[in-house]
View 1 (tube, one colour):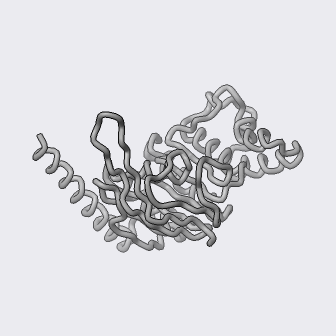
View 2 (cartoon, rainbow, N blue to C red):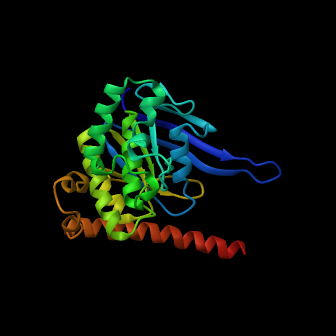
View 3 (cartoon, rainbow, N blue to C red):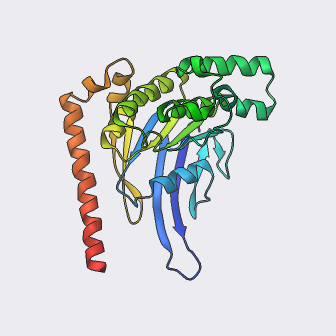
Length: 268
């Protein structure tokens, strides 16, 4: 089966001497090859735990994950991760960061340069190729992180709040870049965010998760990501259907947050 398939996934953390915590319960989801899916939910709903299982950093207590028909049993080159902080080699140049993966694989320099130059151009980094990463702004560093991820040609790109640390203007520009890269590369993308607007803008599908235990609560199929590839994202956010969906999802999240706070007050 092609694409990403999550089947009956549950994750329990059981630290010695402490009560076990059921972080995820019976999560099942199929994501088609080339699809962009955003995942949203209140704190504690297991978003990052799910992403870490998909990346192979955690082994689930129950269920399984397959990617392009292969079971995920640990980290692998078929999956790329983009973190909130770029996790870059700051003393290296932009070029050396982007071509790091292919260099480690022993890809010939001519083929490596061709891939790197294309990605530098695609992400608007061509003029900064020889600059050390520490001289770049946060937004430019996230461009490097995206290019470095794509240089490894993964089947699946996992994004954990990749734009969360950026200022509002830079974040908006980077949202447009994410859509451009997704459309031009055809990669399968799973993106976690705490921003309702970002989840709506960047997801062909939106998965809303509920907490304690983490589980899929609701799913939306959305037109905004496709529309946003060739349109001003600010205009997309003015659309009546965008506003209505945003308000509905916000109400869901707020309801969950209030329930969590109520539980906390009772426990206290």
